[in-house]
Image (cartoon, rainbow, N blue to C red; front, side, top):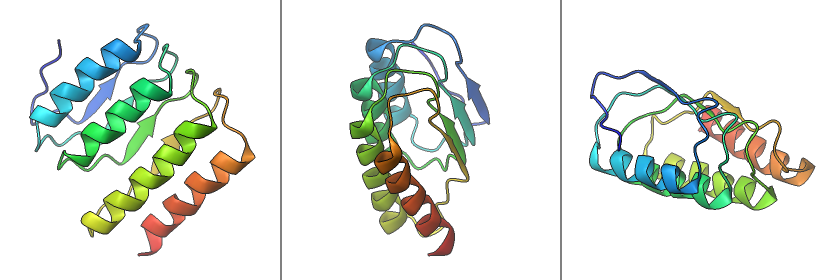
Length: 129
């Protein structure tokens, strides 16, 4: 179980063999710590599938932190996660005027050109609206 501090700025869990179950635990903690000031979270090189990564996005919809950088590189994500991520970015933009994610890493997953285009489109909208 993780306990997040309100002063924490970076969470780097790269290469920690995190699974969907671990992501669900992390997501539950993120929901409970609504005002943490984390700017960067890295979940690269773990064993996270669409289910685990999407549970994190759902938790972030209930969280007031404003993450600027997020990495899910080299996990087990597919095109469906890219669609979920694009929808997440759209919803966050609609509810938080000053919310802008600056960097998102998805390399090394099973996300094709269509998914990449969806995410890029929403990231560009975040920067311009």
